[in-house]
Image 1: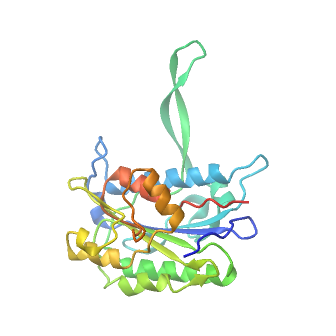
Image 2: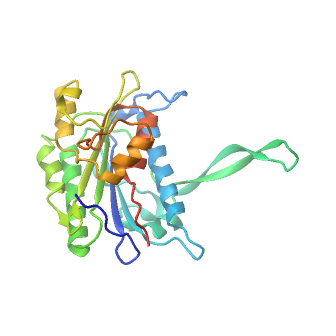
Image 3: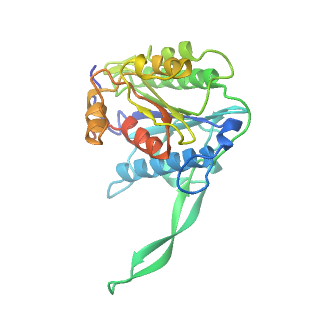
Length: 278
Protein backbone atom coordinates (compact mmCIF):
# COMPACT_ATOMS: atom_id res chain seq x y z
CA UNK A 1 0.00 0.00 0.00
CA UNK A 2 1.12 3.56 -0.62
CA UNK A 3 -1.49 6.16 0.46
CA UNK A 4 1.21 8.81 0.62
CA UNK A 5 0.16 11.18 -2.18
CA UNK A 6 0.23 14.84 -1.28
CA UNK A 7 -3.15 16.52 -0.98
CA UNK A 8 -3.25 20.02 -2.42
CA UNK A 9 -5.68 22.42 -4.04
CA UNK A 10 -4.58 21.16 -7.46
CA UNK A 11 -4.89 17.52 -6.37
CA UNK A 12 -7.52 17.39 -3.59
CA UNK A 13 -8.80 14.43 -1.61
CA UNK A 14 -12.24 12.86 -1.97
CA UNK A 15 -14.45 11.85 0.97
CA UNK A 16 -17.81 10.13 0.49
CA UNK A 17 -20.01 9.54 3.55
CA UNK A 18 -22.85 7.03 3.26
CA UNK A 19 -25.45 7.54 5.99
CA UNK A 20 -28.12 4.95 6.78
CA UNK A 21 -31.42 6.86 7.07
CA UNK A 22 -33.71 3.83 7.43
CA UNK A 23 -36.61 3.66 9.87
CA UNK A 24 -34.58 1.71 12.44
CA UNK A 25 -32.37 4.76 12.93
CA UNK A 26 -35.19 6.10 15.13
CA UNK A 27 -33.99 3.77 17.90
CA UNK A 28 -32.21 5.40 20.79
CA UNK A 29 -28.46 5.07 21.22
CA UNK A 30 -26.68 5.37 24.55
CA UNK A 31 -25.21 8.89 24.64
CA UNK A 32 -26.04 9.79 28.23
CA UNK A 33 -29.21 11.59 27.10
CA UNK A 34 -32.19 10.28 25.09
CA UNK A 35 -31.12 10.52 21.44
CA UNK A 36 -31.88 8.54 18.31
CA UNK A 37 -29.19 6.93 16.17
CA UNK A 38 -30.20 9.28 13.36
CA UNK A 39 -29.55 12.36 15.51
CA UNK A 40 -26.28 10.99 16.88
CA UNK A 41 -24.93 10.15 13.41
CA UNK A 42 -26.07 13.46 11.87
CA UNK A 43 -24.38 15.33 14.73
CA UNK A 44 -21.17 13.37 14.18
CA UNK A 45 -21.19 14.10 10.43
CA UNK A 46 -21.84 17.82 11.00
CA UNK A 47 -19.06 17.94 13.57
CA UNK A 48 -16.62 16.28 11.17
CA UNK A 49 -17.55 18.62 8.32
CA UNK A 50 -16.88 21.59 10.60
CA UNK A 51 -13.53 20.10 11.64
CA UNK A 52 -12.60 19.64 7.97
CA UNK A 53 -13.51 23.27 7.30
CA UNK A 54 -11.26 24.37 10.17
CA UNK A 55 -8.45 22.06 9.04
CA UNK A 56 -8.58 23.50 5.53
CA UNK A 57 -8.84 27.11 6.73
CA UNK A 58 -5.86 29.38 6.12
CA UNK A 59 -5.34 33.10 6.63
CA UNK A 60 -6.92 34.05 3.31
CA UNK A 61 -9.72 31.48 2.92
CA UNK A 62 -10.84 27.89 3.27
CA UNK A 63 -8.71 26.01 0.78
CA UNK A 64 -10.16 23.17 -1.28
CA UNK A 65 -8.01 20.31 -0.02
CA UNK A 66 -11.09 18.07 -0.07
CA UNK A 67 -14.27 17.54 -2.02
CA UNK A 68 -17.01 15.96 0.08
CA UNK A 69 -20.25 14.06 -0.56
CA UNK A 70 -22.82 12.96 2.02
CA UNK A 71 -25.21 10.35 0.62
CA UNK A 72 -28.27 9.29 2.59
CA UNK A 73 -30.03 5.98 2.00
CA UNK A 74 -33.48 5.05 3.28
CA UNK A 75 -36.67 5.77 1.36
CA UNK A 76 -34.41 7.19 -1.36
CA UNK A 77 -30.69 7.25 -2.15
CA UNK A 78 -29.03 10.57 -2.85
CA UNK A 79 -27.38 13.67 -1.48
CA UNK A 80 -28.13 14.29 2.20
CA UNK A 81 -27.07 17.92 2.13
CA UNK A 82 -29.75 20.47 2.92
CA UNK A 83 -30.26 24.12 2.07
CA UNK A 84 -28.38 25.55 -0.90
CA UNK A 85 -26.43 22.30 -1.27
CA UNK A 86 -29.52 20.11 -1.61
CA UNK A 87 -29.14 17.52 -4.36
CA UNK A 88 -25.41 18.08 -4.84
CA UNK A 89 -22.82 15.33 -4.54
CA UNK A 90 -19.07 15.99 -4.40
CA UNK A 91 -18.63 19.59 -3.27
CA UNK A 92 -15.42 21.58 -2.60
CA UNK A 93 -14.96 22.07 1.14
CA UNK A 94 -14.95 25.89 0.71
CA UNK A 95 -18.46 25.67 -0.77
CA UNK A 96 -19.53 23.45 2.13
CA UNK A 97 -18.10 26.03 4.55
CA UNK A 98 -20.08 28.85 2.95
CA UNK A 99 -23.41 27.03 2.78
CA UNK A 100 -24.62 25.40 5.99
CA UNK A 101 -28.38 24.89 6.02
CA UNK A 102 -28.54 26.98 9.19
CA UNK A 103 -26.71 27.71 12.43
CA UNK A 104 -28.02 25.81 15.43
CA UNK A 105 -27.67 27.66 18.72
CA UNK A 106 -26.25 26.02 21.82
CA UNK A 107 -25.37 27.40 25.24
CA UNK A 108 -21.72 27.19 26.31
CA UNK A 109 -19.71 28.47 29.28
CA UNK A 110 -17.15 31.14 28.47
CA UNK A 111 -14.65 33.01 30.62
CA UNK A 112 -15.87 36.39 31.84
CA UNK A 113 -12.37 37.89 32.12
CA UNK A 114 -12.49 37.89 35.90
CA UNK A 115 -11.81 34.25 36.78
CA UNK A 116 -15.46 33.38 36.33
CA UNK A 117 -17.74 32.01 33.65
CA UNK A 118 -20.87 33.19 31.90
CA UNK A 119 -23.34 31.41 29.63
CA UNK A 120 -23.22 32.43 26.00
CA UNK A 121 -24.99 31.34 22.82
CA UNK A 122 -22.77 29.77 20.20
CA UNK A 123 -23.72 28.91 16.65
CA UNK A 124 -23.03 25.45 15.23
CA UNK A 125 -23.29 24.87 11.47
CA UNK A 126 -25.72 22.19 10.32
CA UNK A 127 -25.43 20.65 6.85
CA UNK A 128 -27.12 17.28 7.38
CA UNK A 129 -30.42 16.69 9.20
CA UNK A 130 -31.34 13.43 10.96
CA UNK A 131 -33.69 11.26 8.88
CA UNK A 132 -35.14 7.84 9.78
CA UNK A 133 -37.60 6.32 7.31
CA UNK A 134 -37.84 3.39 4.91
CA UNK A 135 -35.59 0.41 4.32
CA UNK A 136 -31.81 0.01 4.07
CA UNK A 137 -30.85 0.07 0.37
CA UNK A 138 -27.14 -0.34 1.10
CA UNK A 139 -26.45 -2.07 -2.20
CA UNK A 140 -27.78 0.93 -4.13
CA UNK A 141 -25.93 3.35 -1.88
CA UNK A 142 -22.62 1.58 -2.46
CA UNK A 143 -23.24 1.61 -6.23
CA UNK A 144 -23.96 5.33 -5.97
CA UNK A 145 -20.66 5.82 -4.13
CA UNK A 146 -18.83 3.73 -6.73
CA UNK A 147 -20.06 6.05 -9.47
CA UNK A 148 -18.70 9.06 -7.57
CA UNK A 149 -15.40 7.27 -6.93
CA UNK A 150 -15.03 6.20 -10.56
CA UNK A 151 -15.51 9.75 -11.78
CA UNK A 152 -13.08 11.10 -9.23
CA UNK A 153 -10.32 8.61 -10.03
CA UNK A 154 -10.70 9.34 -13.75
CA UNK A 155 -10.24 13.06 -13.09
CA UNK A 156 -7.47 12.67 -10.46
CA UNK A 157 -5.45 9.58 -11.48
CA UNK A 158 -2.37 10.54 -9.48
CA UNK A 159 -4.10 11.65 -6.29
CA UNK A 160 -4.78 10.21 -2.86
CA UNK A 161 -7.42 7.48 -3.36
CA UNK A 162 -11.04 8.32 -2.51
CA UNK A 163 -12.30 7.28 0.93
CA UNK A 164 -15.87 6.00 1.38
CA UNK A 165 -17.21 5.75 4.94
CA UNK A 166 -20.46 3.84 5.42
CA UNK A 167 -22.44 4.24 8.67
CA UNK A 168 -25.32 1.81 9.11
CA UNK A 169 -27.33 0.08 11.83
CA UNK A 170 -28.52 -2.99 9.97
CA UNK A 171 -28.50 -5.40 7.07
CA UNK A 172 -29.09 -4.36 3.49
CA UNK A 173 -32.70 -4.67 2.31
CA UNK A 174 -31.91 -4.55 -1.43
CA UNK A 175 -29.63 -7.55 -1.81
CA UNK A 176 -26.13 -8.64 -0.86
CA UNK A 177 -23.93 -5.50 -0.77
CA UNK A 178 -20.55 -7.27 -0.90
CA UNK A 179 -20.08 -7.12 -4.68
CA UNK A 180 -20.96 -3.40 -4.68
CA UNK A 181 -18.59 -2.82 -1.78
CA UNK A 182 -15.71 -4.62 -3.47
CA UNK A 183 -16.36 -2.69 -6.69
CA UNK A 184 -15.32 0.53 -4.95
CA UNK A 185 -11.81 -0.84 -4.44
CA UNK A 186 -11.41 -1.65 -8.13
CA UNK A 187 -10.92 2.06 -8.82
CA UNK A 188 -7.24 2.77 -8.34
CA UNK A 189 -5.08 5.88 -8.50
CA UNK A 190 -1.29 5.84 -8.75
CA UNK A 191 -1.33 5.94 -4.93
CA UNK A 192 -3.54 2.90 -4.32
CA UNK A 193 -7.12 1.55 -4.49
CA UNK A 194 -10.11 3.51 -3.22
CA UNK A 195 -10.93 2.72 0.42
CA UNK A 196 -14.22 1.56 1.95
CA UNK A 197 -14.66 1.68 5.73
CA UNK A 198 -17.82 0.50 7.52
CA UNK A 199 -19.29 1.24 10.93
CA UNK A 200 -22.27 -0.59 12.42
CA UNK A 201 -24.11 1.65 14.90
CA UNK A 202 -25.72 -0.13 17.86
CA UNK A 203 -27.83 0.99 20.81
CA UNK A 204 -24.78 0.77 23.07
CA UNK A 205 -25.84 -2.47 24.77
CA UNK A 206 -22.99 -4.67 23.53
CA UNK A 207 -19.23 -4.26 23.50
CA UNK A 208 -17.97 -2.90 20.18
CA UNK A 209 -15.55 -4.81 17.96
CA UNK A 210 -13.13 -2.19 16.66
CA UNK A 211 -10.74 -2.54 13.72
CA UNK A 212 -10.60 -6.37 13.71
CA UNK A 213 -8.17 -8.28 11.52
CA UNK A 214 -9.85 -11.72 11.33
CA UNK A 215 -13.45 -12.90 10.95
CA UNK A 216 -13.21 -15.07 14.06
CA UNK A 217 -13.40 -11.92 16.18
CA UNK A 218 -16.92 -11.25 14.89
CA UNK A 219 -20.18 -12.51 16.43
CA UNK A 220 -22.44 -13.22 13.44
CA UNK A 221 -22.86 -13.53 9.70
CA UNK A 222 -23.85 -9.89 9.16
CA UNK A 223 -20.70 -8.68 10.91
CA UNK A 224 -18.55 -11.04 8.82
CA UNK A 225 -20.26 -9.86 5.63
CA UNK A 226 -19.51 -6.19 6.33
CA UNK A 227 -15.98 -7.06 7.46
CA UNK A 228 -15.34 -8.83 4.15
CA UNK A 229 -15.89 -5.67 2.13
CA UNK A 230 -13.98 -3.30 4.46
CA UNK A 231 -10.53 -2.11 3.41
CA UNK A 232 -7.36 -2.69 5.41
CA UNK A 233 -6.34 0.50 7.22
CA UNK A 234 -3.41 2.30 5.57
CA UNK A 235 -0.34 2.52 7.78
CA UNK A 236 -0.81 6.14 8.86
CA UNK A 237 -4.44 5.53 9.87
CA UNK A 238 -3.48 2.36 11.73
CA UNK A 239 -0.75 4.20 13.65
CA UNK A 240 -3.19 6.96 14.53
CA UNK A 241 -5.73 4.37 15.73
CA UNK A 242 -3.03 2.81 17.91
CA UNK A 243 -2.21 6.23 19.37
CA UNK A 244 -5.86 6.43 20.46
CA UNK A 245 -5.56 3.11 22.27
CA UNK A 246 -6.92 0.68 19.65
CA UNK A 247 -5.14 -2.66 19.18
CA UNK A 248 -4.86 -2.29 15.42
CA UNK A 249 -2.63 -4.89 13.76
CA UNK A 250 -1.07 -4.57 10.32
CA UNK A 251 -4.10 -6.44 8.93
CA UNK A 252 -6.69 -4.33 10.80
CA UNK A 253 -9.64 -3.30 8.67
CA UNK A 254 -11.58 -0.08 8.71
CA UNK A 255 -14.56 -1.69 10.39
CA UNK A 256 -16.35 -1.21 13.71
CA UNK A 257 -19.23 -3.42 14.86
CA UNK A 258 -21.70 -2.46 17.63
CA UNK A 259 -20.24 1.03 17.72
CA UNK A 260 -21.60 3.55 20.23
CA UNK A 261 -21.52 7.29 19.61
CA UNK A 262 -17.92 7.66 20.82
CA UNK A 263 -16.98 4.92 18.35
CA UNK A 264 -18.72 6.85 15.57
CA UNK A 265 -16.78 10.03 16.32
CA UNK A 266 -13.40 8.27 16.49
CA UNK A 267 -14.19 6.10 13.45
CA UNK A 268 -14.80 9.24 11.38
CA UNK A 269 -11.64 10.84 12.76
CA UNK A 270 -9.46 7.83 11.95
CA UNK A 271 -11.09 7.12 8.59
CA UNK A 272 -10.50 10.65 7.30
CA UNK A 273 -6.94 10.91 8.62
CA UNK A 274 -4.58 12.26 5.98
CA UNK A 275 -1.38 14.11 6.82
CA UNK A 276 0.32 15.25 3.64
CA UNK A 277 -1.11 18.73 2.90
CA UNK A 278 0.26 21.53 0.78
